[in-house]
Image 1 (cartoon, rainbow, N blue to C red):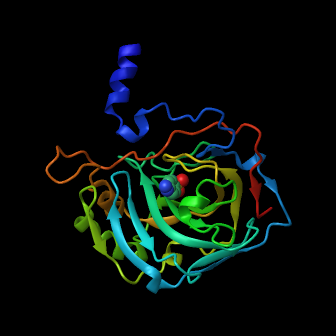
Image 2: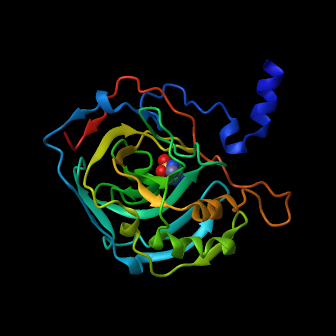
Length: 261
Ligand SMILES: N=Nc1ccc(S(N)(=O)=O)cc1
Ligand SMILES: [Zn+2]
């Protein structure tokens, strides 16, 4: 059994091989969201999202996902309201997905996996001078999670999908100068929120998670386009970029709040 575990572990991408628990972690992510255990909080405000599409910079493959990065030197693309004390600046968004449609998301709802999950990463530029500083603070980051489900083709996502062949290998980048990520966020205002962490190293417990209740629909070809990306650099033995999600973490002493009854 031990040698089997070693073999299975060796099959994992280096990022997820290390014992993925941080000592003393009490608010790790992702978690299963048990709908019936979430607590409606009438004081939660609607989340206000205002992105400036011209703050979009580039897409790059960083070896564990593909990231669309934004110019976060000003407050042009921000979110405010919801569970947040002040406004947070958009820095990047990325996805997590599976090798097949049965899994791929990081969070689950009533133990159901979605084939993929979008993360829009924001940082508290009101209280901290940089993203790197905010990553170390309990209220430093706010990440909006959006589930992707198999269905109709998503026209807004397609502009991203068309660019993916250009970032197939790790550490490749392509300029991407106008994109409004709000087209990837469901119009339904309902969300769950809880205190959590980054789901990849440094795994710091600095994230206010805002998980949208409604998924967006994407089609099979669009999911397949994610799966043709590679973890590996040009010239290395190819390893398909799939199953780049962290295992579920214990809820411990946390309550998931809902913005809806
Ligand atoms: N180092 N930056 C990171 C930003 C966001 C995430 S996640 N997957 O929690 O949104 C992980 C790492
Ligand atoms: Zn993520």
